[in-house]
Length: 469
Image (tube, rainbow, N blue to C red):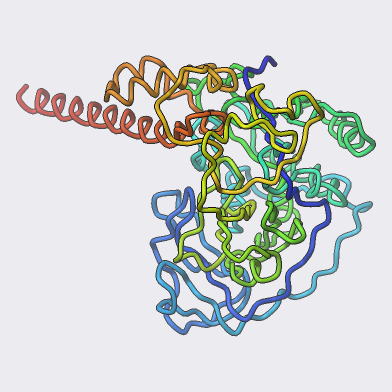
C-alpha cells in the first residue's frame, strides 16, 4: 500500500503497557449518548433490580443495539440527566478460565452465521464494529465486501492493540475464526505495525496459519491506521458495499461472546497526557465514575479532560459523569489561559513543530509537554501548505478552507472535502491555528444534508408523476 502525508505527534504522558483494574465503585453512571449511539428506548423502570448483562436501553436508530448493565444493581433514572445510574453495585462473579490447550480453535457452535450475529448484538460485541468508510455501525444482517482488522492505534493517547494482545493472543485468534465464520468468501485484511520485535513476530506467526487472512503491515505514522485510509489504499470502494472494520478489543469481544457466551461488560481504556501522574491502561466497567478516575490519576488543579485521543477527542462536558461504552482513552492536559505571542516562531529545543523553525528539528525527536495554550495566535491562512503536506487523504485543506470562508460549498465539494478522515493533523500543524477539522466536519454534514434533501425532493416528484399517470 502507498500512503500519503501523515505525521507523528510525540507528547509526554504516553500510557505504559500494564493494565490496572480499578476497584468496584458504589455507583455506575451510564451515559445514554456516545459518538455513534443514542440509547433512547428504555427497557427498565425506576428502582428495578437488574443483573449483569441485562438490557437497560436500546438504540432504535442503530439496529436496536443494547446498552447492557455492566454489573448487578438497582436502576435509578432520575438521579442524573441523560444517564442511567446503577447503585448497590455487585461485583462480577468469578469464572474459571478455560484451558487454552483444549480450545486451540474456536468451538463449533450450533446455528447459522445469522444466529451468531444476533448473539453478537445481544451480548454487546457488535458495537465494536465500524463501517470503514462512514465510521457508522454496520448492519448486522448485511454482507461486507471485506473486513479490516487492525491491531494498530497511533493517536495519542488511546488504548494500544499490543497491550490488549499480551496474554490474550489465543483469545484473539479464536475471535478471528469466529469473525471468519460470519462471512462467505470475503477477505479479512489484518493490519499490524511494520516493526520487528519478539512479540510482533509471534503475532505474525499466529496469523500466517490462516490462509483466509491477508497480512497488511503499516508504518507507524499517524493516521495510517485510520479505517477509511486503509480501505481506500486497498481499493475497497464504498460503492461496492460496506467494509467492516474492527480493532483488537472488538475481536476479543467477539471471542468472549461466541466462545464463552458472555456479555461484554468491561473496557480497557488508556489514561494519558501531561496532566496525569502515572499514565496507564485501566480496566473499568462502562459507566465507571469519571471523578473516581481523575481523583486517582490527575494532578493538575485545572485540567482539560478529553474523551478520546489528543487530536480527535472531545472535551468531557460538565454533565459527563461516567465512562461511555465507546470510550477508548482519556487525555488530560493542563488548562493554560495565557498565550504566547508569535509562539509558533519561537525556536526551542524542547518543543516540537512540523515547521523547521524550531531547534528541535536539528536534534532528536522529543516528547513535548503539551498544554492547551495555543502556539501562536488566530489569524488568516498564510498558505504555508503544511496542512496539504500532512493530509493523508490527498486533498488541499487550505484551498477548501478558503472556499468555506466564502460560503462556496459547491466548490468545497468539488475539492473533495468528503474525503476528509477528520484525523486533525491539518489543525495541529496550522501556524494560524485555524480549526480546519471542525470546518470540514460541518461542511461534510451540510453537503450530505443537501444530497439527502435532493433525493427526497426527487422521490416526491416521482411519486407525484406516478399518481398523475
